[in-house]
Image 1: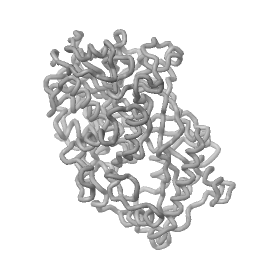
Image 2 (image 1 turned 30 degrees about the horizontal axis):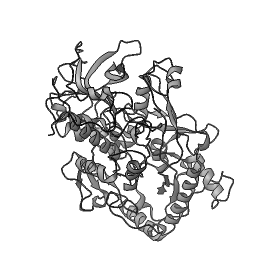
Image 3 (image 1 turned 120 degrees about the vertical axis):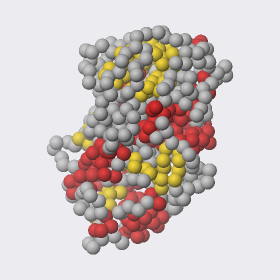
Image 4 (image 1 turned 180 degrees about the vertical axis):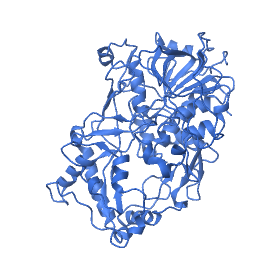
Length: 581
């Protein structure tokens, strides 16, 4: 299909190489063999007629106009938007399976079981020196919808100053807050009476609701928390996705009618995109490397999930462009396996170098630490949950602890109470993702280097102090007892030394890694992609996921990743003159 696309004649001010000029000419048809996909398998639907099978296409073509690698928070958006033009063919590749299951779609009952399941890549970091030598568990969605199918559904865009810094200080032209806000709005269908005019979208694919409108077991204590934050000095701010982020509020979530709204459900199934004849959604296939002809990306090598490394790969060609949306770990992993990365590291693994770029550098992640406060006698009904705090914390926020030391606080978790999580959201420490092997079945080495910059520890200490203030101030203090103290820490509980030790023993990831394919201008030695998301020095290849963030945002990363997908699709549609729905 679509062998005669025309690209827009408008020049790209950031990428003026001859190879990029070719991308604005008529797309050439690359001929090859047709590979029949495997027979459709049952995907655990709640009912036989719930959704069509995404792999039930008549056949896998030898080439497509656009290939999107990774059907996660960004990839589903890119593929859905590009395929709105019926004259182009789009292939969306996902290593995991279908997500239209009860476990994914009913998160309040099953969310704890999704991590470390078949729907999770279940990455692990290397031992972290400054967090007591612990290995951190890094969940990452391995299913349609990616991490939006296994996350805790908080919808947080970040502070406008995050994006303005990208644009004004880091060379990310076109990425200021005012310039990205339309793409947040485009994605959103905000269903709430709580919200600021002009800051929320209506009619977009993504369902967003406000917990203020909800009726849930712990709403009273949640509202007490907000009131205590205000009593401790924070402003009340019922819409942190509005004009200002700072303040205390109940959450906004990607949930409607107690059902998760992940990007596969929103952008592929509920809008009917998966039924489009020009969109092929290929599940249970892993992209093992990219194919290059000189400096141009021309194809993707695939292997079915059930096959081992000795099985011949399938090669699918891209007539137009390949968009890598494999995430902050998966994207640098694939790029380096393909010869795009630091030259010495690529050659160390016997891989032919395609482009010497700082792929896998600039890794950033958010951290939090549990501060536990049991409830006062007679107040247990306010803290109802069907799982104990210990079970919830160890299952969902765990790390592989040292064998010579029990988990400090989680093993002493009160039966009823509140766990408040002071968080580090603007870390100074920078880590890496590196290859362990040229074999695509061997996971990469993830080293976030937590607390390598001591300012990060000091910021966590200050956050911990504020959390203690909140718990002992206002309405929350009426229902909470004193903090649960770890008596094995040899420092007075009120001392900074105690807090530092407690943080080192217990700080854990919030699952928000970013930055490993950093966006910036071509002359920036730390940048991998430009503001149009094209990989520097190459053509036919873009990256569109959280890995492109030059610095992290002040909040959860799912909403920004969806915005990045919308922005990427818009850039491609503008350059190639594609139609919209």
